[in-house]
Image 1 (cartoon, rainbow, N blue to C red):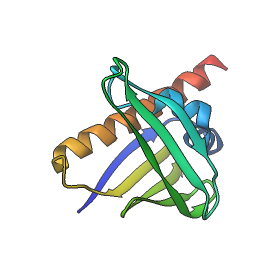
Image 2: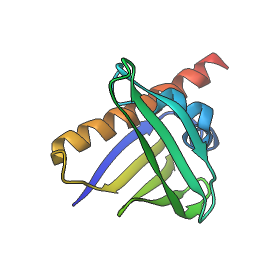
Image 3: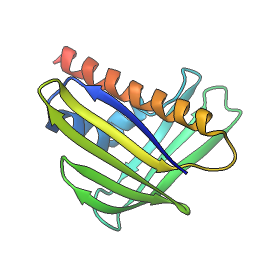
Image 4: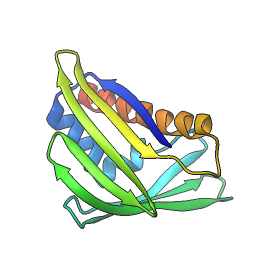
Length: 138
């Protein structure tokens, strides 16, 4: 099953791309809820390059690595990757209103489709807030 989430980021495409692909930014926005955080992130943004984000509950009760390999990079347009036996695609589409960021990924069987959609959408919404906040601070 493919699951798609999307958000509109009212910012220039270069700023959106950079925030999505920079480890220091990823550590700020990559969380689905306030009781979780990303403690480490690495990005080798090229086909065959690896990525990893260490996600942990703030109380230390649980953590995991979201990690994989990039399979295709079209700068400022598209990122394709694999993680385990699943794959994902991130698309960036610029318009007058900002940048539409769309993430499509293979669902898994542990959590319901609704749970997965909700979690990934929350992360993408955090991403949009992070980019807006960065631009406001500049």
